[in-house]
Image 1 (tube, rainbow, N blue to C red):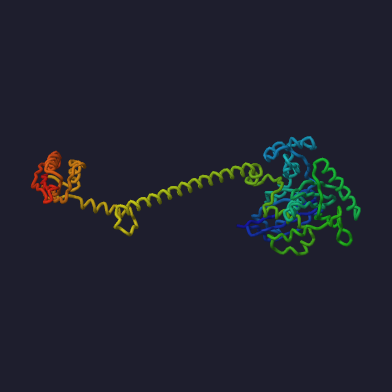
Image 2 (cartoon, one colour):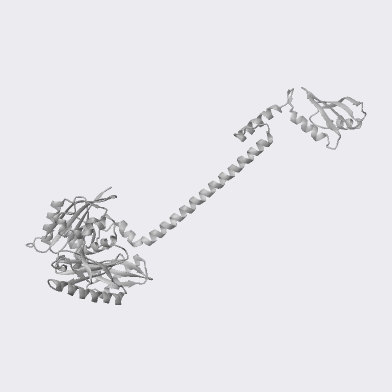
Amino acid sequence: MSRKVLSLEIREESIAAVLLDSSFKGSQLETQGFFPIPAEKEGNEGIKAALQTLVETINPTGATCVLGIPATLVSFRNLSVPFHDIKKIRQILPFELEPSLPIPVEELIFDFEAVKHDKQQDLLTFSIKKAEIQRYLDLLETVSLRPVVIMPGGYAAARFISTMTDDSSDFIFIDNGEGNHTIYAVCSGHVRMVRTLPVAGDGNPIIRNLETTLKRTFTALQESQGIGVDPSAVFSAGPQAPLLTTGNGSSTLLGVPVRSIDGLRTFPRLKGSLDTPQWQSGHLDIALALALMESESVSGVNFSTERSTIQHYWSEYRNNIILTACLILLALVTALGGQLLAVNAKQQRLAELDRQIEMVFKSTFPEVTRVEAPLQQMQIKIKAAGDGSTGFDLTGARVRVIDILNALSQQIPSSADVKVNRMVVGADNVVLSGDTDTFNTVDDVKGRLEEADLFTGVTISSADLEKSGNRVRFKLKLDF
C-alpha cells in the first residue's frame, strides 16, 4: 500500500517542496517545486501567497505533510541526566532547562535527541515557542495542510545523512541560510550539537571566521560535555552555500573538503528524475531529506501537535513495550513447548500401549501371523471364543461348559490323583470318563461333586480296575 508524502522547507525568502509516492518497495518522486516568497508582501501574507501557488502547482491532496522550519526559531541546549527512562526525561526536561531560558517554559514546546553514555543519557534539547508553531499551523491550514512532523529542515538533512554514512564516522552539516550558518555536528550517527552563527562577510574570510568559531565551539563542547567532534566530512546546503566555495568551486573547512548533499538524490530506494536544472540548483535537497525522513521512518525530533499517537506512545514507552513483548513471547514459547512435550509424551505412551497390546495378542493367538489392528482382532477372537464356550439351551436353564468346568475345578482338589480323559455334555447331564489311583478316590470325588449346586445328582456308572492293576477306570454321570 502506498502513500504520498509532501515535504515543505520554509525559509525567510522561499519554500521548497517535494512530493513522493512512498511504498514498501521505495519512494517514487512525483513532483517538486521551488517557490520564492513575494518580497512585496510582508510577513505571513507572503508565505500564504507562496503556499497558495505551491498547492495549485503540486496538488498534494491526500498527502502526509512534513514541515521544515528555520533553525533560527529553535533554541538548542546540551545537558546530561542520570537515568535512561525517556518518559522521566520528558517530565523533568522543562525544569532542567528553565534556568537557561529567557521565557517561561509554559510557552515552549520541547523535544530532544538522546544518546546513552555510561550510566547517563546525553541530551541535545530543542525548544521553540508554541506561538511560532501555531503560526505555521495556521498558515498551512489556509491551504488545507496539517503537518504530522515539524522539525528544523537542516536537522532532517543531518539526521538522514547519518543513515547513509558509516555509523562510526563524525561529520558536520552546515545549513547556509539567509544571513546565518547553522552547524550540525554528528557523531556516531547522532546529532550531538547545533549552533547558529552569523555570516561574517563575503569571500574567503567567511571560511576562516567560521573555522575559528567552530574550533572554539568544539573545544568548549569537549570540556563542558565530554563530546569530542573529529569530522571526516563536511556537507553544505542552503541558499548561501556558494559562500563556502572559492572561485574554483571547492573549499576546505577544518582541513576537510566541503561537499554538497546531492548524494541524497542517489538514495537506493528513491526513484525518479532528479537531474533537472531545478534539482541541480541545490534548493530542493533539504526538502528531499525531510520527505525521506518520513517515507523511510527515520526517527527524530518533532514539534507537531499532530504527532501520531502510535509514534508518541512508542517514543515514551519503547523500553517497557519491548520488555513486555519479550515476556509475552517467552510465555508463549514456554506454553507451546509445554504443549509439545505433553503431546509427545502422550504419543509415546500410546505407542507403548499399542506395543503391549500387540505383544498380548501375539502371545494369546500365536497362530495369527499378520497383525494389523491387534485390538480389533483380539475383540473378534474373544467374541468367537465366547460364542464357542456357550453351552446348550436346557429346559429351564442355560448351562455353559465353562460353568461345568468351574464346578469340577472347585470340587475336585488339586491333591487328588484324578485324571479326566473325556467329558461329554448332554442336554441334562454330563458324563466324565477318567482314571484314578483307588476305588476310595472315586467315591470321594462322587461325594464332593454332589455338594456342588450346579449338579442335582451324581452316579458312578462304572468303576473297573485296569489290567495292570495300578489304576481304576471310572465313569461318572452328573445330572443338572
